[in-house]
Length: 108
Image (cartoon, rainbow, N blue to C red):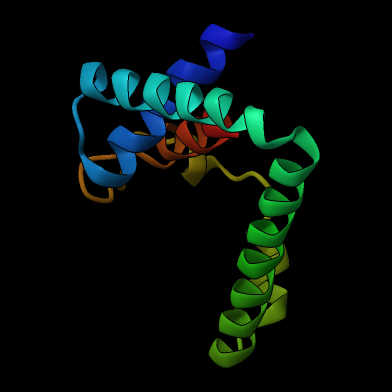
C-alpha cells in the first residue's frame, strides 16, 4: 500500500499543479522523509499538529460553503454517480471527471 500512496500523491500533484509524475514522486518521497525526521520530536506532537491543520481545513471549507450559499438539493444529487462522471467528455482542463476522481481518491 505504500507504493499506492506514493503513486496516488504523485498523480494528485500532477492533476493539481501539472507537475510531471517523476518529480511528483520525488516530492512525495521527500515529504515522507521529512515527516520521518520529525518523529524525533515525538509522534504525539506530530499528531497534534496534523489534527490542528485538519481542523483549520475543515473550518475554512465550512466557511466557504456557507458563503457560497449552494443549492443543497444539487449538492446531494452530485454525490450520486451519473453517466456524465464516467464519460470521456466533457473535459475540464484536459482531465476527464473520472480521472480527476481517481486522482483524488488515490491521494487520500
